[in-house]
Length: 164
View 1 (cartoon, rainbow, N blue to C red):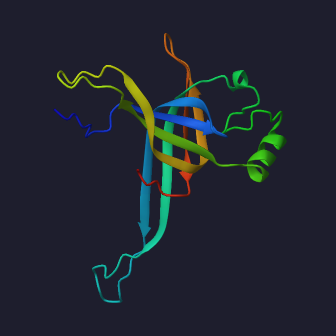
View 2: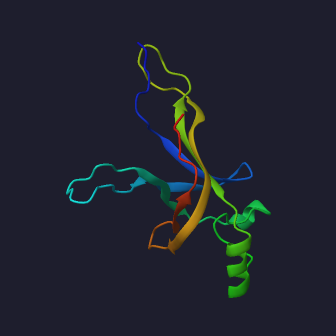
């Protein structure tokens, strides 16, 4: 019997910097909206056209708090962590901001027992999408009793995502 996976299960989303996976994302939402203008003539109550005037791509993500210093020279991609005062923070955001990529993967099955359909080993992660140019709009962080600390971020990306 052929067991072909039809649904997107076992997802993994990761923030990568220079090809190094620096953090996993707990929840991830991408939204792509088309803004439309309205065209109607004088004396006409109904719209005659709704032309596209812009395309907006946004994301929200919850990630685990991670200690990037353990990775050596890798810095937090969404925050100028070396800024020591308000002026250097503002200058870094205004003059040195660089986009970050968010990679989305799915887990694949390795070996499957043909008689029982049981997955006997894991396969590799298969990349299904990349948000290549993410810019931060807001961030917050949280800690909870008996929980893992987290960071919530939201922002925009410039290039629409095409699932592979």
